[in-house]
Length: 415
Image (cartoon, rainbow, N blue to C red; front, side):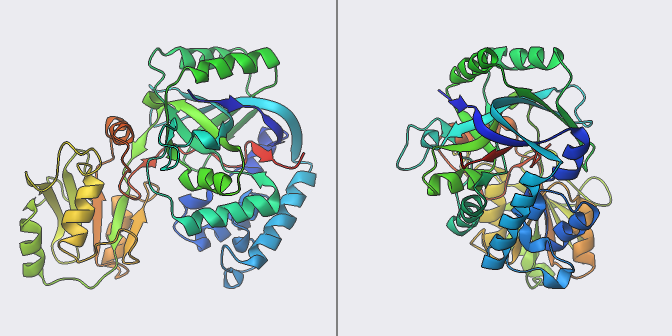
């Protein structure tokens, strides 16, 4: 059973024009602080001025540590300005229907339900029967940073993105019917041409009907926002801001890697690879992004793009987490060949699908990395199987796309 409750006090943009100015990608979709600073120069009212307040400064040289006291003080002041702004309004006791129209998937209608989910339904060691299943481990310092921001601003800004089975299709059908009955309250196009639409649900009868529909779902699978949900739990809060989509409508794209370490001699590299992988050149010339499970791309400055294929016996096919290519790469390439056993090692950089294989190749060619590794996207079936086996995905292995947008609906916590 999945419980969703209305947001008691919600802060939303007053209209679509305001939503375009306020809403933004989530804080963890950027490759660095400079990208955030650049965005804030173009759009100074972006909600990133709160969620990444250390970047809301006059020059890049003034960017400070993200979890610093100065950044929290700035975040509080910026949140107060946002609440007082003519761009926002407070509404009470709402759910919302949220649709993301992805131009790359014209045959899919991704539509979900937003509100407050319960922290005591998150599956943890202490709550093994929890029905909201996380897909990866939580790094405590990162969650603490988000918790500090929530506590300082008395607001939850980032939604947690969840998938539900919706085996009957009724959940999606009812959401679509609601959306078809009226124009959206908010509509904004993001930097990737995805169109985000929000229908605010105020009617008590409609809210109850949607709550009953979602309550029929046995599980929800966290797609994005593990640390945002953990932050609320750390603070002892009963709820966290969430949206729930039918899993069949959600998209997963590749999550690649750069290796920033000393390059190995070519003979040693090939020998190490050959113990775990079949090795050949990819079928096409140029940047190589695999699309088939167990195909892995490796770019070296001397050898160009290589295609690695996992050898039988080098992973357990019955272990859903170990059989995912991201786990295979970590164990059989990074640890075995490069000697990087810890996925959190600074020599590894995780690159989401907002950067393509050509971008990774340039990082190597221009000397900022030794190797680029490209990996086929995890399938939705693989993702769900890991969750159902009560395992964790390899770190940074699911880049769900399109992403939910931050700042369209925010929860104010002081009553």
